[in-house]
Amino acid sequence: MAEEIVNRVAQSKLITFNLEDYYPKGQRFVFDISEWLLEGFVLKEKDFREQAKNHDWSQYKDQFVALDCLTDAIVPAWAYMLIATYLEPYAAKVVIGDLENLESHLFQEVIDRLDVEALKDKPVIIKGCSNKPVPKNAYIFLIKKLQPVVKSLMYGEACSSVPLFKQPKN
Image 1 (cartoon, rainbow, N blue to C red):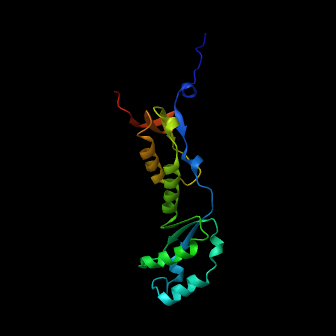
Image 2 (tube, rainbow, N blue to C red):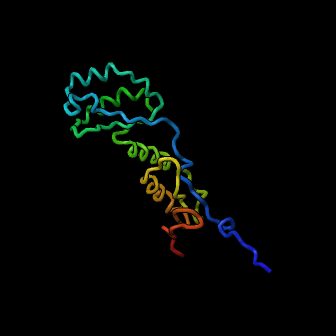
Image 3 (cartoon, rainbow, N blue to C red):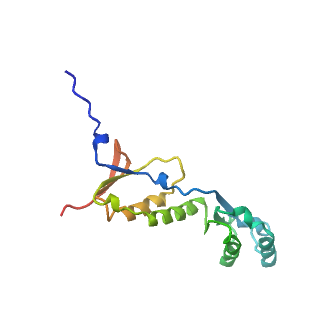
């Protein structure tokens, strides 16, 4: 008689946490400040202010905007601040940096707001694969949020996970 195959993964108390489920919806945009610099490198204040004043900022309504300079120009802090003042009434979020930096900021906010009490003293696996751009920092933010609460943390898939943390036995 053949032995019955038991799906231990399906029977386990393991809770899968998928960061992709918390991906903030909204359009992302990188605003390249170098396009407003003389030859991409020199900021002329009068010209820069004129560009900012005449730009159509409403096109960024409800978008997540990363302010970046894609050349090696040294951009003073006030230039980013000035652009942020124009974006403030329209953009959902503005950060300085690239898209990964923007995603990190967005996930930090999401994770900070998470209520993880339902995971108290439970074994949790953080799903590894995703189809959306989940930044590496998001996993670190999640560890900080979950570790004080959960019984154990793993990473990957239930069938092939990597143990990360286990609460010490009292």
